Length: 205
Image (cartoon, rainbow, N blue to C red; front, side):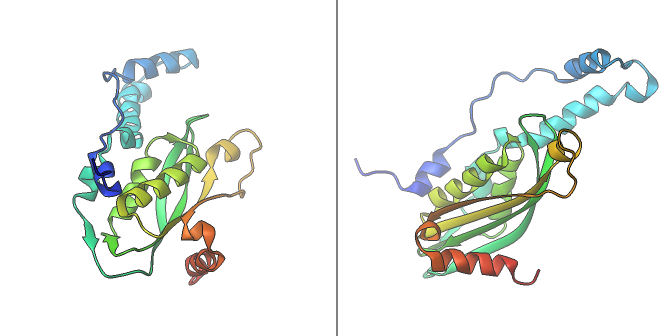
């Protein structure tokens, strides 16, 4: 049997199976109590429910469906140049301390007669940002998903972020940034392709 195309494989994917949803709010009440707070006082009465709603949103990437997000917006086009969407804002939470990290992602691919609707790239970023994450894995997941969807000549993804787990606690450094990158195909193999990508995302800044 012929091997399925990368696009078909990606669109056939479903979100990771999830255990039955359990209420988070009662657990947050327990945390507040363990921290020495009074969950029954006026200012905290509705906090557990608010925290649950916030956490459901901030981790909604676990149940996102890539096929529904792409929604058929992959087009056959006679085009073999670089496509870049830069400065895609994202917010995520580190899996070690569940504190936010945030910044921008720059995404590029070297087309091979197939392109994707531009708005889909930020949506793909959100799928992987809205999970408990580490920046390195998030960068890689974004790049690999675009590679599978489009089978381009190459993909480049760079993420620049600041981490509250370094800013609010630990070393308490306010101005340290973290940069991660994943280069696939031509972006890894050809210095001129990589240099063009880096030059274009820095232009206009």
